[in-house]
Length: 375
Image (cartoon, rainbow, N blue to C red):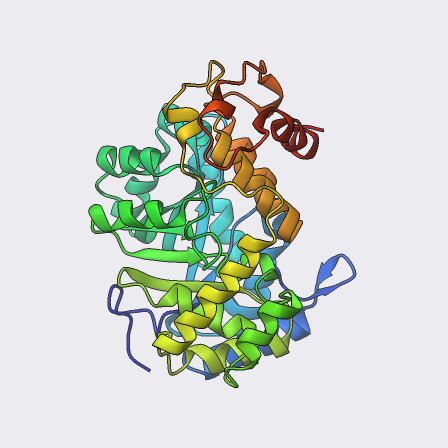
């Protein structure tokens, strides 16, 4: 297995995300997690990713018991994150960070992220000088590499990376469904990373498991390839971009671990036939869309909405929610409405409908969006 092209200390380009660990009731199943960690390390991989909010703090403690206590520190790399709810002023950051080291049973973190940056979170981090504080930890040798994870629009990421060129890498959501999604905008966010020459770590490559349990027609397309699992195509898709340093997978059982290892140990990007198959899977999801919006943006660019409602983005979030029924779409709707009018604030002026090439009843559709996301 080749060393990582961006960070030589990383083995390969596949990481163990410790957000969805095996559970026994309300507790992490240490026996299964230890066996999974053993399989991961035995396969040659070494990158583990956690955060204090994962499993209500139990992820960090499980990493300590199942990884840190069981392996020499040279055998694994550990990533942790500074998350907004756990500090309210700069003076609280260092004590929290020192507790994270204790909870994880280590003396330093190989990678440390400013976590879940969006418009509001970034403002808090700026006010508390969180970036400067964490970068001081790096100067002290408590952090090897300094980065951020991101959930917002590409323009904000461009601002952050311009204001903080010391950021070494960016963790983003990227998968074949979200790549051109108007609410997530994975492609545009990735392109900002390219612009600033920042390596990318991928989260949610299988969209929280949604790209494993596919609709029957989509599943048949991938099965007809007679190759790997549905998850394997999603992982290899995400890992195939030039600036990708690492693809994380949150695994909760040994079957998932073994499947992912088989896909990523001798990594090969999707070939032309496989890439065409993934495009067909995306087309099936688009055909199932409850709102046939093409994101042409005439509705908001030709006639500016008086309430600043991001109509195409909200329709994309609605369609994703109808298709996948997971937390993700709700989260991105909340991100979008931090800076723009909510669907429920439509004044029904009808200007948007006059320029819609699809002749959508936008005013009625915005009420459906509000019913889903603003209950």
